[in-house]
Length: 220
Image 1 (cartoon, rainbow, N blue to C red):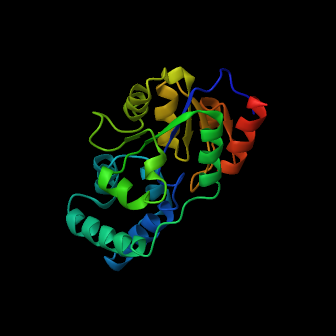
Image 2 (cartoon, rainbow, N blue to C red):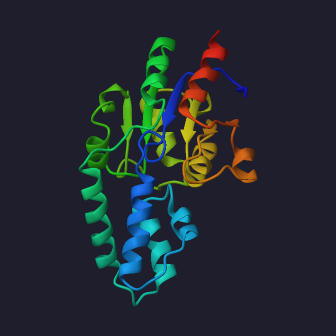
């Protein structure tokens, strides 16, 4: 894996990349839909990954129909997800080591997420203070796959988006980072890297450890 330009800053997605949250949401949505007497195929959930809340709701409405009690469904899902998260949210493998490596390289880094600032504060208690900027829902006009979250992160870092490396696990996130002009690496979580994703990325890494090793080789 090679990069077309030197990296001056790194922008991270959060859910599914820094923290292992997507599986909890997936399981809650599928199980509660079943309890409500509805089928919720995995592919429908996967199409929501990386989208802001209003866009995810639109996908659910299109699938279940207008007669479905979407407010009740969302409330039940988030009650279950919150209960699961109360026990603690695990960092993905390699997060701390990669942040340490970026510090050693003197590279600034930020978060660009579709989640709220409250969610970020609750989930990134161990590492949140290490980021130079956190861009969350409410900080931009259009969510992913629009480039707005990544462009705002670059602005706050005072780095040209073209000089930023974006790390994403979702298809919509990759589309957003690529549209922002960032060098993008996909680190798959629930979604595999498709041919479209490989075309939008400078590379696909199987873990954040691999990203760290790649940056170390470039700096050597």
